[in-house]
Amino acid sequence: MRWDRSSARRARLEVFAVEDTTVQLTWAALPAGSLEATVGGRTVRADVDGGPGSLVLDDLAPASDHRIVVRAGDLTAEVNAATLAPPPGPPRCRVATVGDLHLAGRSFGARGSVVERPRAAEAPSVRCARAALAEAVAWGAELVVVKGDVTHRGRSYQWRVAAELLAEVPVPVVVLAGNHDRGLYRSTEPWLAGVELGLRVVRGVEAVDLPGVRVVLADTSVPGRSRGRISHRDEAVVALAAAAPSALVVLHHQLELRPELPLWPPGVPRGEADRFLDALADAQPAALVTSGHTHRHRRRSHGRVAVTTVGSTKDYPGVWGGYAVHDGGIRQVVRRVADPDCLRWTELTRRGVAHQWGRLSPGTLGDRCFTQPWPVSV
Ligand SMILES: [Fe+2]
Image (cartoon, rainbow, N blue to C red; front, side, top):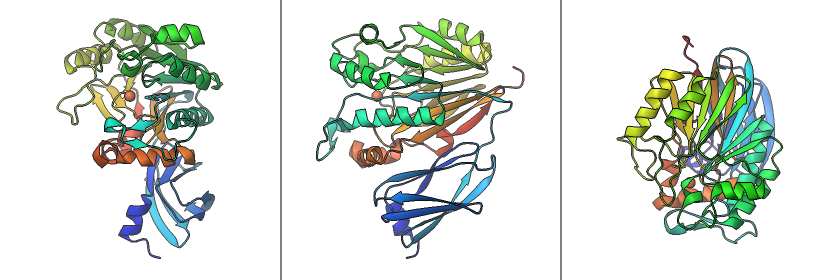
């Protein structure tokens, strides 16, 4: 069969993520059986079950264009992928983020319209979070930051689910609260749950130093509100960031930029967001700020500072974020959670938000995966 337009639309075979030496291919449906991906004379094989899947090709040449030929059943397709240049200087460390876990929620979309049928014993949010954490650690994360909306409603039992999942992670974990953790239905405060359950939950502003970078974490949540704030934290964040070789600043709420559609959910209002970013760019231009909250993927620059939002573990596309720190810069990668069970769920959630979620969330490949060299003057 030829790879015509309708087969391509059905399969949605795409390059979802790139690094300097890897490419993640994902698809919505390919003929069941075996898949072959050939790149640069090397062929990688994988089993395909007829549903959504993912394949990571590694050991590719950096900063190069790669032509990948994919064969599955009687279909043959070609995709092109450009690997990133690594940041300048030797690699120093790797950090991963997972966000908007919404444990132990079972539905997605306006009025919870997307649900799993038949209902599995364990909620999809929990299965996706567990797989995301395992895949991020396998990628090489030395620290995992959970960047808010850990729980769906801030209930004590949801924090217990979080603690059980995070106890399985073999590297240090730091947790930020999100608006869902501090919403009107909460039965505890995140830091109280943290003390009780042995989680490191950030209260105010904290930092973790790793080789080559300081990870600065700020709680932007406001009790009972969806919107976030940073004006009461910005001096502390900027001071911590400025006193390090470089800074990865992690927040729950996005720093708003208007006009930007859609406007829901509200993040940190643009006025205070800009004041914070101005101060950070002055004091520490070797910085990347990343947030969650919108469950969408976007990237922009504020002066010399890179600003990103990265999506949720449990709704389309269903991701975790990786940060490879070098002496001369940082590389962000956003990978889809590759576990087939999770991909089946996250593919289902594309139907959310009046069937628009599949279009609203992913952003572009360049929003998700890029290399940011630190400014030369640093
Ligand atoms: Fe969220």
